[in-house]
Image 1 (tube, rainbow, N blue to C red):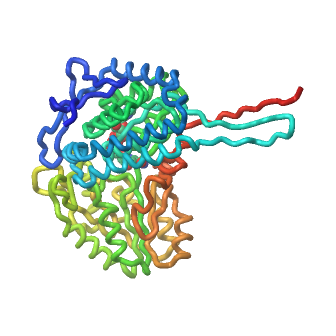
Image 2 (image 1 turned 90 degrees about the horizontal axis):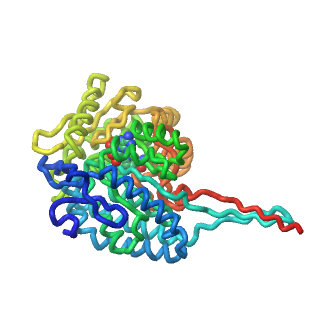
Image 3 (image 1 turned 180 degrees about the vertical axis):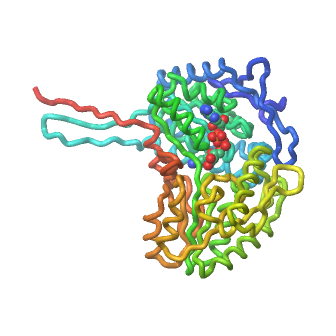
Amino acid sequence: MSAFLSDGLARNFVAGEWAEGDDGAVIAVEDPATEDHFADCAKASEASVATALDAARASFDRGDLADMQPSARGRLMLRVAQEIRGIANEGAQLLCRESGKTLDAAFDEFEEAAQYFEYYGGVADKIEGKSIPLGPDYADYTVFEPFGVSAQIVPWNFPVSIAARSLAPSMAAGNSTIIKSPELDPVGLALLGTALERADVPAGAVSILNGIGPDIGAKLVASSQIDQIVFTGSVPTGQAILRAAAEQVTPSLMELGGKSAAVVFEDADLDTFIASLKSGIFYNAGQVCSAMARVLVHRSIYEEAVERAAALANGLSIGHGLDNPDHTPVISALQLSRIEELASTARQDGARVAAGGSRLDRKGHFMAPTILADVNPSSRVAQEEIFGPVTCMTPFETEGEAIAMANGTEFGLVAGVFTRDLARSHRVARKLRAGQVFVNEWFAGGISTPFGGVGKSGFGREKGLEALYNYVRTKNIAISLKG
Ligand code: NAD
């Protein structure tokens, strides 16, 4: 274990130092598979927030990152990537225990985090402006400037990889960054501070605060000392943050929830679809913003698809994440109750429970892998984000009907099309109201492909080159050459 955890306490990483909370205040972290206390995390004090804000501003004003040679900034980020790989095994153990996810998935978060630093480190010296022709009397060009201090609020479902997803482009652009970790699983993310420290990231350029959302998170986003907000989380929290942002007119990036649909046509390869369903709704116990939360299937293959989906759900191995089973617990007792409550409304609304439907009778926050069939598209379970291992299946007759149903929620994060008909895949992909469309493989794409929502799924994009431009603003410089 690294030094900061040797006494079982994950501290805040503030201005290059490890800080405890006021009067030893801690957040108790539970193992969701056993319900046992797993670790304590020092709760950031108001003083820590103030220190992080002052240090971030001072670092930015000194030009620690912004005035560094862009290629040197890129190399610094590659060192961070290397240090993240160095902590990945230890980090995966911690993240697995606190989040309930599998050890492999936890390790993948650190690997993905390293890849974000490599990807954006590689473009740190390629953030190029353009020159604009105004005739012989003027020289005109644009430059991309960092915002200043970026406040980033991270959710618990992928705390390490989502933190890196926003931090890496923010650093590549030259911003100072303050991260607020999720209170349910802050320990693995706290370890990221070790990688930043070992890579010699300038003190204050990045801080990581542990704290309760409506307390420390709300203070951070309402501060007049920040220049940008990046929020990944639920719609209600996003709305609260946007209200705070409105007060200071703080530019904001919102990555919110989803209720994404796969459309499975009659010519789809069902083996391919079932393989996608397995990761689409059961990876991370369905706690994925871009989960395959709805499945619309052509009526001619609908019963077969429901039967196979139910067999998949019933056949998943279940256990502690450390053993890498197919299915793991959800993050907390509260989350399990929410999932179970929403799933239970399905029956009253006329749906058939093809598999699962309720919590498992065992210790830990385990929801049974659940397939709901004949779901009414306007019912609560088909409209609200469940954020658990539950998908809703509904038959359709025509392509137009499928598209209307897929687009029929207030969300629009991702969508999927399963068909062997190339023309249809393009046609339908264009009509789906979503920031990303997967064809014949759910979660196709990766760190280099832009990701983000429409409607209540949010605005702005993460991942890929596209995301970089969310972390800079354009300045135009117009020079008269007359006289
Ligand atoms: P949440 O909104 O409850 O919390 C997210 C973060 O916001 C946490 O760090 C929390 O402490 C903080 N927070 C809470 N209230 C706050 C406030 N008033 N001010 C500032 N910060 C505050 O979300 P969650 O339950 O952690 O995550 C699940 C949600 O996140 C789901 O809706 C999911 O779809 C969404 N999500 C979206 C994406 C995406 O990229 N679009 C990715 C992952 C998760």
